[in-house]
Amino acid sequence: MNHSASLSAPPRRTRRIVLVSLAILGVASVAFAVRRPLMMSAPRCMAGRWHGCFDTFNGVLLMMLVAVPLAALVVWALARRRRAAGVTSAWRMSLAEVGMVHGTVPFVWMTMMPGLGAGIVPGRVSLVPLRDLVTMGPVGIVGNLLIFAALGFFAPMRFAALASVPRILAFGAGCSVLVETAQYVLRLDRVSSVDDVLVNAAGAVLAALASRHWWRTTAEVPSDQPRPAPASAG
Image 1 (cartoon, helix red, strand yellow):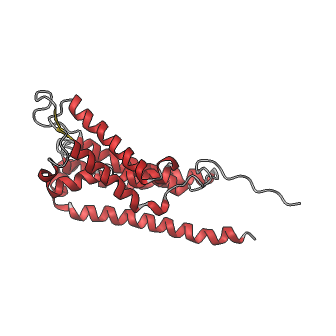
Image 2: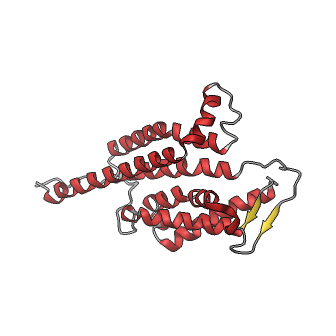
Image 3: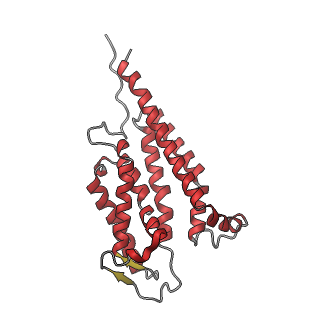
């Protein structure tokens, strides 16, 4: 009997349960905090009036929460397929991939929403650090922290190359620079600010630190490879 395998199974199961519980708790906390504004968009979405559902912050957040069961189903399907193929860390890989997409795309979508003067007002740039930070307010700061938080939380769990704080910081800052540049080039009537980049990157790092226990390290066997077949005795 392989004692090491039997001893490693309960910790893996416990880590999986803890991770899923934290994800559920996080979604529930966000839903409770923004329940009132979300309910303002719900009647229009249920009536099929998509204006206000995908082109407002409240509507996008509502759609993000409504899609949680679908995201969980995709995680389950991917993990089941990988486990059947003998892939190690199937649940962690699947959760990380779906989490990165589901937790990042809606916030980037909101960031790219055009203002009233889109296409008319020329692009604006603010390159003085901390000047815009004082005008963001608590909601603005929290929103900027969340934009790449899911990416910072899940990316090191999926990719060993990103399993370090400096790399996540650079990755988050690079993604934020791309978004800010797109805002300027597309003339979305938004200010491309260096403070947005700083806060976005900080949010990615803080989220990465929260998931550090589950990071995929370079010392591990590649998770996307099937387990080697056991050697036959005799």
